[in-house]
Length: 422
Image (tube, rainbow, N blue to C red; front, side):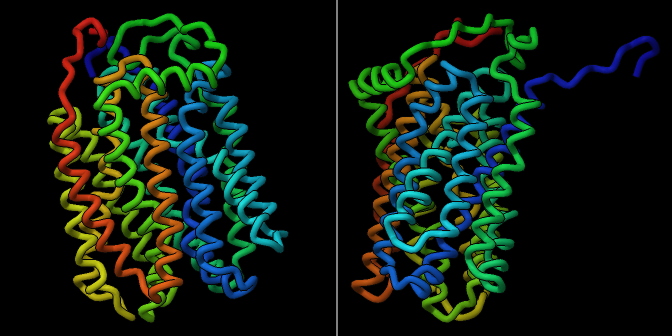
């Protein structure tokens, strides 16, 4: 360093991004549970996998349907307040489930409370933070924040699997509740809603005054939906992301562990493989963010969906009582692709819908979770009816091929130079 030259300060945006990362990890703790608890709940209460799948489906659907309204509520009340309430709802739902005795309570606690809470911290939360605090490196930051969900899976999935196997499902649910509550102080003390709150410009951009709170959050979210729904790109993005949800959260996250157990694999071993997906998901998603800053997002999506579909077609042949090299290859390959679709999807929303992009992405995310919910339910029913998951793997692979074609026909919309501060 030259004499007399002051060291450069780290921009506040990076601290906000770090708090967001930790928050998403805390919220993601619950997402590690459903696949682990299907068999224990079935054995203890006698509920069918279809019944349990309904609760998981409600959670996944609300996770998506809440996102656009949460994005609008963040514009009205601020990011910090909305996220603190959301974390409290996740903790409440997880704790209440410890005392449940009927399947409707599972649907209420897991489905309603946790679904609303996790939906308020969904990827629309990441999009809102990124849009407000960053101009430079948006794709990379989006990739890192998206990878936070995988990091949460990596941390909590093996832990919860061990707890379920050795102490039962209730201590695992309590662990998830405590993880959500532990994040609350970080959000309240360190999160800030807008760069202007601390007198800063967004990273890589010029100073922008903080907008006035926008009233009528629900009305605004619906108006943005109706406006976006009049365009073809919205339906193509929603359709591809619905297939993304169907082939990840709805399929692998919910049904991989019980499917592997059907083939004689120990639950802890199957959970370990799912956690490995999280490891490579972090790499793949951050790399996807880097690619999104440099390449055509439509082509990236087409490649991601095509590769995912191919991998799913091979999965039924790889399931076995023990872990073997071809299965490891699948885990690595699939993990790199897990949510690599998120950065280019957010970039396309930003390109197509400008200042409304966070709310539009919330609606696109809703389609993601509807797709996930349908397959979470259908997968359980298919297992009850056919005795295996083979049909679900093959159908999901075919859907991924369709999503690849849909991504390629999204038309480009040039961004006006004035829309991005120098």
